[in-house]
Length: 187
Image (cartoon, rainbow, N blue to C red):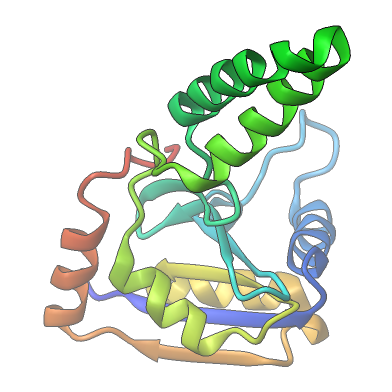
């Protein structure tokens, strides 16, 4: 199946989600329990924070992603740091213990290597990082051309900063390989 890639960028980190919600509400069938068009289930959202870190959430080429590069702390090392800080804090009495626990946990969490990190599709993340400016957000859809057309119609004039192209078979295969560890998106 031939797939297209569409990236609609917006100024502001939360703008893409707001524009999506407005378009989804306009394209839903009134009367019944908010019957949504297919395109509403096949979108992913990207936020590129001012510090350059990326947040991916939603469906990308049929796979669900929830990756936050800003959420990189080590829980194991936070516990070890808190214990060490608490022991050192014993010298300062009860206030020293409290301060030692807190500072030890903070230092340990940020210095240690996180061991429970989400599977991040590196190739996709790097391509999105190149195409989305800091402090911006985007709606991303990787789907058949007709589905992308539905989404663009629903977004209307708000889809002004659009990059769209067809993916070659080799690009689709590389994308699938990159997303292989991610669970399937909703049907």
